[in-house]
Length: 341
Image 1 (cartoon, rainbow, N blue to C red):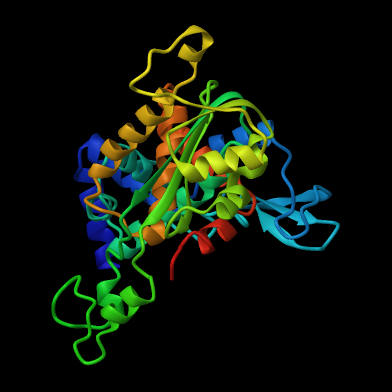
Image 2: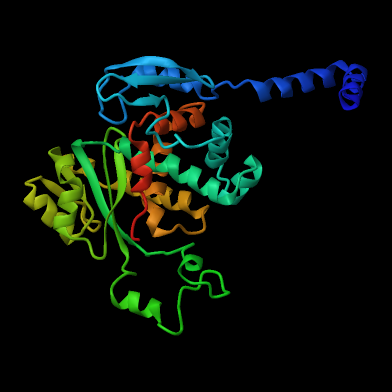
């Protein structure tokens, strides 16, 4: 009782500004407002919400909990919320998510984001890849007209995985002297470079994707992007034998610009300058991370592709989080995003 009396006396003697701050803090403790409510409303206006279990839209509203709308599916009997099945369904501090994305977009690393948001480094890492893994849903489904394609090889990396293999007392060292595991994995081809393919058309559609580990093969290339090129009329290529074989089997007319020859007529429109510029900008974008594990490289490629599409928007953090949480099966994308494990 004395504590309550002294607290009341201290509150009454405080300045009006201090009293307002105390009231606001107490109010926030006892109430909850969904920090992503405007984004959820925007998603509901743009697309039909479906049950994350059966994929049907035969459901009814089932009240709200902490300002988050709940639903009941009449088809399968499942109860779900606005965030069920999305990549952020189990994130507790959703009110910090937008500020976290702003730090991501500004180029802050995982540690810096963790300190600024007062979360653990592991949580910061998980948030980043939960958001990025769902962005693969927005990769273009097809290309048309004049398109450009190039292939590159990048070094395979196991950055950050050394400590998980065996504690050696030296960060990043993954060689076990007793078994020489690193030498064995090299012999098995586990450190072969990654084959990336970049493709774009003249309507801002583009993607950079990992096709396979090791030398690029026509079969793997056809499985990854073959169906996307059915509407392409002319394919501009870099001088690569596999790409030429791929275009030939797809029966797509292709053109390779020769640097030592003068370009005449309509051939001046056939080049790979656009996609090469995209790839050069990708290298500048990746420099800030000081290397990326190959297991998560595709997530960063999704990030770069999405940034290219939303740079013209003012509030890019809102766009990024809207793109992420509007995927009904985003949680499954996050589970499958890690490669080469």
